[in-house]
Amino acid sequence: MAKIQINGRKITLKQNFSVIDVLKKYKLNKKKVAIELNGKILPQNQYNSKKLNHNDKIEIVQFIGGG
Image (cartoon, rainbow, N blue to C red; front, side, top):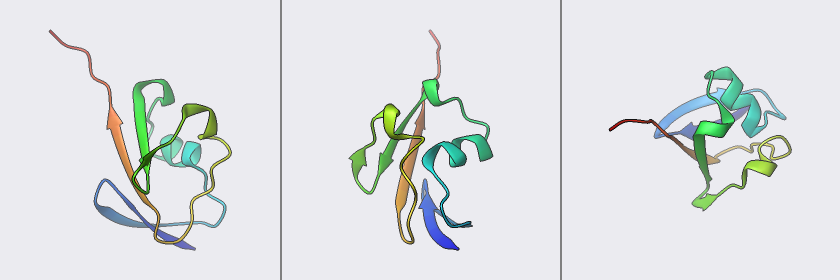
């Protein structure tokens, strides 16, 4: 198990959980979010391959349309 922090909230995940797995868990569209992992923007093409480790910190920002 890995304990990570998402948007300031601590959660526990299974080993080998990827960023895309987190997005699926929270039903977020990868085309409508930006991910910061440990203080660095993660390119969208790495969402599938980037595995999360113990003590990782993720910030997820959703794009919302409006006027």
